[in-house]
Amino acid sequence: MRRPIQIIHVAPGSAASSFTRCYLHLGNGAHASVVENFIAADSTCGHRANDAIIVLVGNQAALSYLRMGADAADAVNVSSGIIVVSAKAKLNLFNMTHGGAVSRYQVFVTLAGEGAELSVNGLNLLKHTQHADATLVVDHAFPHCTSRNNFHAVVDDDGRSVFQRRIIVRPHARKTDAKLTTRALLLSDQSEADNKPEFEIFADDVSCAHGATSGALDENLLFYLRARGISERDSQALLIKAFLAEGIADGKLRDIATAQTEGWLEARR
Image 1 (tube, rainbow, N blue to C red):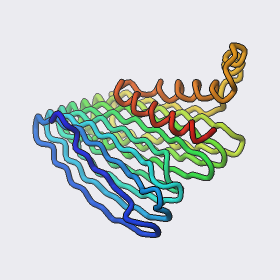
Image 2: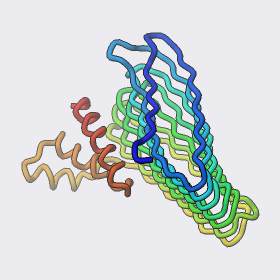
Image 3: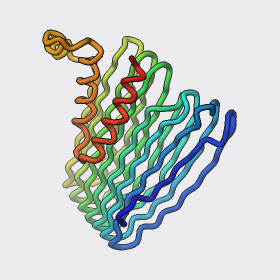
């Protein structure tokens, strides 16, 4: 499929609630891209969104799934995904949250065939009192499966980013290759990032690793940029965009994330 499948959630009105459900079955050997957006009209406020999607990826199929959360500033969004990836299939999942007052995005992925591959990238851009929770459970149910999970968060003011990942390796899932990385950039003394990586490994002959870091902008790099006549805000913006871009290998996804980040930085000024 050359054109992506578009799923656009538009807030129905102020102080309203929406409950949406989607089902996608990608056949054996098929290729598709899905772009899902959560948006609100300029005058919409105080709405609640509850969404769920079920995705089945057939044998040797490939799915690219991009999800963008850009709700109204006071919106509440709770979304769930249940995804099954079959033998020798590939899933590339990217989620970016930069809107809404409270959001939770929880995804349950089962690698249900030998040679299945999963790549997950996530970004949280938070400010004011925003709270965003990103939860992922990956079940390595068959041997010779690969998963890569990278999550970056930039948190300002009194925002809070929560990152939860659980990787399960079943007893017969030999030759599993799973890696998990999370990094958080805190822009104020009140901002918070909670990282909770978990592994449940019941098999031998596997390769599993995780790492988590959090911290502020590098003062030496800021000084280097300021000494060359770049303003403090512009120096911070350059470092923030570099921090987010380094975790995204796909060029198209990196361009999308950079464009959204520039808008977020402009509103931060």
